Length: 154
Image 1: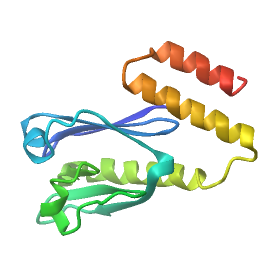
Image 2: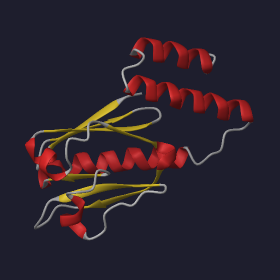
Image 3: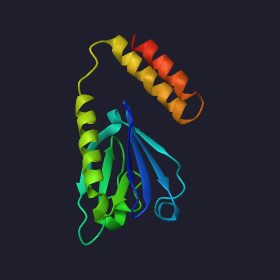
């Protein structure tokens, strides 16, 4: 499962929701100024401890992903513009952000169920490693899918 969410204002951000987590891709000058040229960021569901959404009003809204061991910016909209785990959105994209929040929360809640045995845990760790290799363009999407199916006995 891969679902893509695109928010174009105030800066263009594409968030892909995969089976294992989210991938945040930032485009354009506004994001380069606010967050820097950090490249895509992959956050596994297992690392996300909370999702906060502030609706747009007089200012833009934002959706913030709190990460285990992370140090997210606190201090409202101004601080959120600098946080790499935060996505800003205008009123027009609020429904997109709310749907994204719902899907991510659903996935982090389903990941709270621990693997039934050690073998399952090892399989999940191997798949996460493969995903990292895929995100780094070390392996192809086809290689990733083939190995994932092999590990999951599909």
